[in-house]
Amino acid sequence: MKIPLFLFLAVFPVMSVAQESPAPFPPPKSLGDVTARGKNIQRTMRLLAESTPERRNTVRILFYGQSITEQGWWKMVADDLLKRFPHADLVIENRALGGYSSQLLVKTAETDLYPFQPDLVIFHVYGAHDKYDDIIRRIRERTCAEILQQNDHITKPEALTEETDPAKATIQAGNWDAFMNHNFLPSVSRKYGTEFCDQRALWKQYLRDHGLKPQALLKDNVHLNAHGEYLMAEIVKSYIRHDPALGKSDAEEWVKVLEVGKDLRFKEGKLNVSFEGNRVDVICKDGKSAPASVLIDGRKPSEHPELYGATRAQAKPGSKWPPVAPVVLGGMPQVEDWTMEVTTDSGGPKIHAFTLSGSLTGADGEGRSGQPFTSKSGRISIAPDAWNVEFALGTLGGLKPLPPKFTVTWKTAPHFTDTFVSPGIKDLGVEITVTLAQGLAKGSHTLEISGGVETISGLRIYRPPLVGGK
Picture 1 (cartoon, one colour):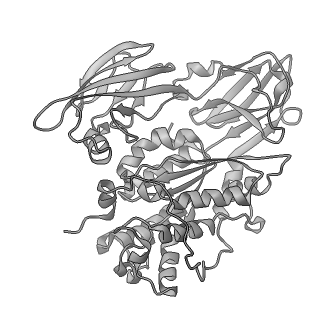
Picture 2: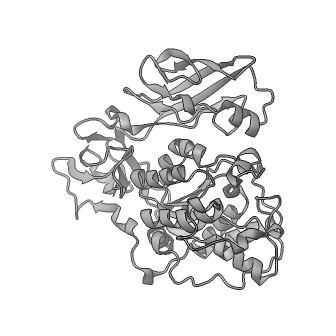
Picture 3: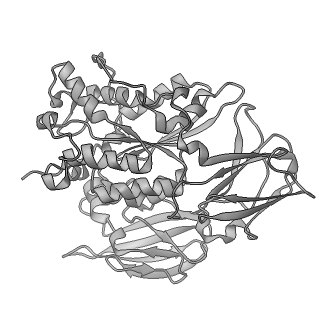
């Protein structure tokens, strides 16, 4: 029986991200025509390339996916960016979850991807194609991130002669890998305007050029050895390039800066502005001022339920894989810690009974896995399909047998500020910003800032390109 690749990864993820010792691997003889590469990530590349000691642009980059993304190649790419752009203020994170195909990653993206608000997402995952589309679509609905979208590397000899004509590589043709890599993933890239990293074609070329079999770059049937990590890093780096000749990427229109004195003016100590978008940051300058108060659409940001988010639920005993995802907020949230005490029934299908309490809300109800749950306060909802205890804690976390009792915790976190003062400038070259609101409903909004005149130099408005989502 053949096991689909994404199911293999779900059961046998790479548990370690340690990079193997460098080795003198033969470089690619050709990475193909690179002249058009990078077109859809040029906002990120411009920010990197224009960084100087006097103006160090902050750039947020997120690697997201499963066990392939956890492997050491991502660190090689990150190190290359740090070396090529030493003056940029780079914030680079890897939040991949080994074993989580798109069916699960679409749930954890709610806590791990969209709230990070990256400038660039470097993304790869196996799994169901409809959930893959959901992840990319929600990036476009909730963030202004550019996307470097990787297709799959080569894992078996028959892939070297697979069908590459998208008209023939259909789902009905029966070759899942050919359908995904030559039909579906390119169509998703065109649909959402991502930068498509066709590492599959370059992987094939490298194997042919050096007379290698796919297994020469793998440590098992799927995961990369040191040679494979080197090649994947080289391929990805060939797409992360700045080229003004490519013109502006669409993302330049999604993020706008309004400068005080040019686009904005204080009147009687107040700044009033109308904007469209789901996020607004204030850009600070050095100095001291009284605290500034913020109103959005006539209300404090804390009075907007959509400006709260749940963090990743974690179990104790447990591991990084969440046993419940997503946790959905409702009612009027407040910033607090949540604790779920879980008891696993013995024998038969695993049913998990639980009680829930909030650090401010107090005791907030009880329920059982497999059944819809809404807390007494209405602040927490958990769908039946959010439960994933056996896989997250047992298969991936190694807790066998499952503990009869365990605790799950998460937080309701603020994506806003009601009042602020400039945090002060420690590095004159690094822009200091404070997020006033992140996650606003799409459409027009009004912002009023009272005070803080001396330390506000402007606003940055984020308007994601697609309507929908949170």
